[in-house]
Amino acid sequence: MNIEKIMHNLEKKNPGEVEYLQAVREVLESIEDIYNENPQFESGNIIDRIIDPDRIFTFKISWVDDNGKVHVNRGYRVQFNNAIGPYKGGLRFHPSVNLSILKFLGFEQIFKNSLTTLPMGGAKGGSDFDPKGKSNGEIMRFCQGFMMELWKIIGPETDVPAGDIGVGGREIGFLYGMYKKLARENSGVLTGKGLNWGGSLIRPEATGFGTVYFADEMLKTKGESFAGKIVALSGFGNVAWGAAIKATELGAKVVTISGPDGFVFDPDGISGEKIDYLLELRASNQDIVKPYTYEFPSAQFHQGKHPWEVKCDIALPCATQNELNKEDAQHLVNNGVLCVAEGANMPSTPEAVEVFLDHKILFAPGKAVNAGGVATSGLEMSQNSMKLSWPMSEVDTRLHQIMCSIHEQCVKHGTDANGYVDYVKGANIAGFLKVANAMLDQGVV
Ligand code: NDP
Image (cartoon, rainbow, N blue to C red; front, side, top):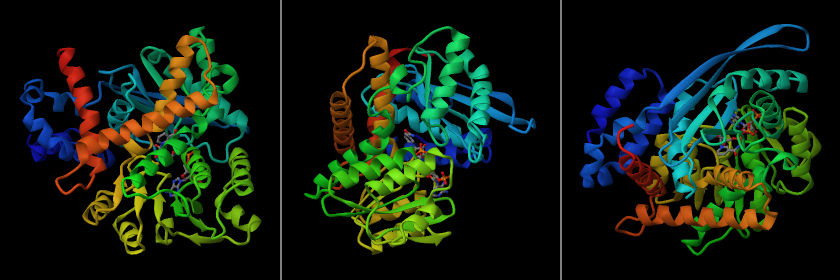
């Protein structure tokens, strides 16, 4: 495999798509050896076929705000690869959304979904719509407009979207309501649904819980655990709150949360009623970071800073892509961090990853660590197909088993001669092999 040539061609076809190119390069570098050892991949031209999405849809959403003003946003769905199951991946509503970001996320999703052991292909979608500061009515009208286009290309056996940044239970509800009206069916077409209408127990917490289950497996390889550890995490969204709850439950103290404008450090720990308060703020669409410090004076707000400067044992970046840079990684290492597990997708820059790997820190990438979200979406799809609901304990047990299995696959494919586990390599190889072999089995389509 000639990585530079592949990247050169990809860059020519996708100029300036930084995040997408970054994600592809990382995977190619990890799988190079295994690819070269298996000539059938080259003769099937698997690389060219896997790095380009199957298809991309873009569409316009016109909607009216509460003052009667008309707005226009752009919507996307990137259907990347369906070799092992229906396209599956979240929808992101955020002003930063563009094709590069959705292609990077869709590409990552192929390997993540493969790792879960469940039959799901890779996809991603969303819009540059900003839900922040919008009323419920505005969000509903936007979601309805979005679904007026999206419903034509999704279905329970073709493409099953879910939430991501800016898309939580409320948005999934509005999207599902409109899909049901248009398609005239109640089906598992979206995951992250409400419990009363087809949702699965544990799905809201699943990505955060899974993140902690995975990190716990990493710690066990060093004879360590969460008990008594200090945890720094970023963001406070769908992923971070579940991670904060589970880390606390396992005996750790979570001391940071963050937003785009800075982070909060609470030396007393962020748990219990503090988490309830944060969730209330989130539900009412308010900024959460600064109000937290007014309510709990033990906490300090650090404007424009990242939580990674705080001394911690475990770092869980749970906010967004490229939020942890080389300098942040160096801070964490200098402060003796034991484990860095990515709850978000690609939160560490390639330079930061290099620092972690050079210092042989326990470090694992989002596609392995945060796969519990989509895995539980897969469990939601199974329950929808069977028209039944599993109890909480059953979903949680399955989630836990899946996270342990992903960890085993990473160890199997990522352990080097000195016993160090390169989780990036392990996750990429394990995820790739399953999809590539499925593509070969199914011929050139
Ligand atoms: P949310 O929108 O629920 O939460 C994101 C959080 O990060 C918010 O608290 C947000 O603050 C904060 N944030 C956004 N930008 C920055 C920034 N530049 N610096 C610091 N904080 C920031 O999103 P999710 O929790 O759903 O997703 C977070 C990450 O996890 C994404 O990478 C997503 O792709 C990934 N992921 C999500 C899954 C899920 O189940 N939801 C599944 C797997 C991965 P504010 O609200 O103030 O903007």
